[in-house]
Image 1: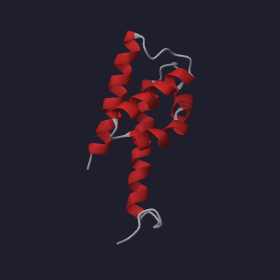
Image 2 (image 1 turned 45 degrees about the vertical axis):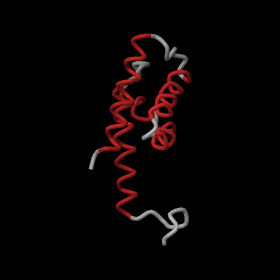
Image 3 (image 1 turned 45 degrees about the horizontal axis):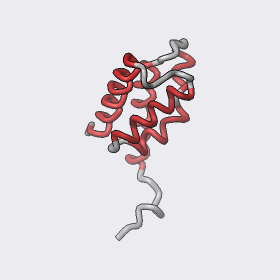
Length: 100
């Protein structure tokens, strides 16, 4: 049996991961809670994407990741309008994992 931790990702796995990263970045940059211009929002979330990808499939961890982004921006994630945004973002990101 092949050890997944020792093998290199196949080309289609790399492509799939890159597509996932681009989709997540697109979702986050469209959200843009600080209302920065498009050039900034396209790059603002890239550092968070690896943690988000690791959290897909665990709704609590994913929600914590999104809340962490907001806290880093000094936005209170417990405010009612923000809670709805968090739920929508988590739902959109979770649906990426279901795509074939």
